[in-house]
Length: 251
Image (tube, rainbow, N blue to C red):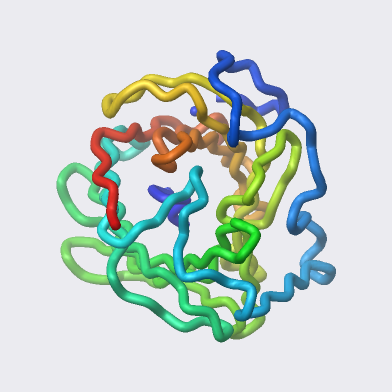
């Protein structure tokens, strides 16, 4: 997924970051997660379209139409640039009108991935991830759509992209399609401070992201209040990361 910018340094579950402001940011008192990780057989989230709203305004993953994020950084293969745009399109999934977000990745100036992600927010403020249409590209030609999935199709199930009230220690499935899409994340930091090219943020939360499909690979992501993803990096199984260099609010 995206994560926004699917695509930054703790493998532990504690917060070693700097303190920032409090308020509506992540709490250090854990509350039961909206959904837990569960096993594949036990994971059965139930979504009611009547309990979804027409906006995505979760402060840690705000997705207003027209919003754009640009990231720059490095990977094992070279210089990476990522552009994420909330399109004006919608896709109906499981009876829910989902926002369509385009995520374009360039490696050394060449497009290597063009993905459309689908999100919706429930009336409690949780942002759900409902699937993605992935296109891996080489020399301008689509060579793979591996990792694509749609909630409700062929056993695929939705997951939480951002909880309404992030709390330390809570962990979530981001997505679930056995053998194809099994990303998970845990809230490992709250009220942290980080400076990236776009600016300094002191109400950030951090997550540890992983998948049992690639158990040796672990990433850390930082989401800033009112902006969304500002930084991500590998903390195991790879190197490099990306930082937010520009952000244009939508609406």
